[in-house]
Image 1 (cartoon, one colour):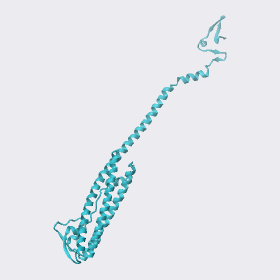
Image 2 (image 1 turned 90 degrees about the vertical axis):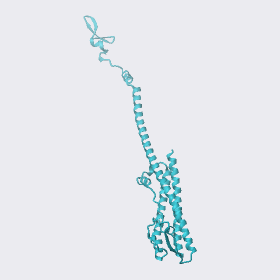
Image 3 (image 1 turned 90 degrees about the horizontal axis):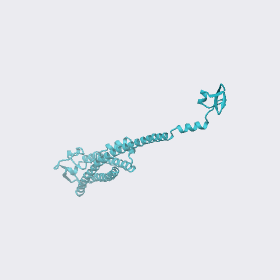
Image 4 (image 1 turned 180 degrees about the vertical axis):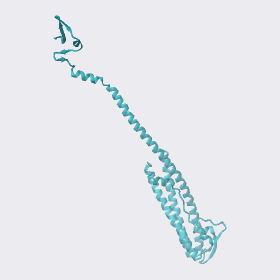
Length: 275
């Protein structure tokens, strides 16, 4: 073999001819000549589709972020729909309770006026004077009106722990105050009813201030229009009637305060639902 011009040639009969191997590759005396290292790296880098890979990565990341955004948006929509449903139920229930409170205020006002008239009669009459008075007027001594408020939606919201899901802090605060106010009204109504049934009725019956059987009727019983009850005037009788007047006036004040809180709560709910 003779190296000539970088090609391996075979001397045959005094002439040189390229070998098959030499035709395919450059060689030196130690074997094939390899390509420069930097040439191979450049070819490798140029063969990687960086632009396409970057574009695909952006699409994948964008798809993931979009999925998260859609999921979060759906959750917010569901939560808002739940809140609207709860606020609507609360609004309906509070409107009903406001009507109950206003009717009870009117009833307590009528009973107070009847009791005031009864006490004025007793104070104006000589002690021991007995007179048959309208049964409805006398029956106010033993009939204390308690208001049965509706609390289904409110109690369900509080007992389930979902009250905190209502976004408006003002609504949560006022609703908590409203329930506390209602509890106070109920407690005072119960005390007034117990006084009428367990203190006032036995005291009058035992002292003979009223001898009609209607006195032992349930407090919710309404006497006929023409029914009359014999009542005897005395300082003790006037004092007992005065105690009932105090209970009626306290009931009116408590219900008026509760009604005001209810109206405020309704305004807050309406403003929130309008958003």
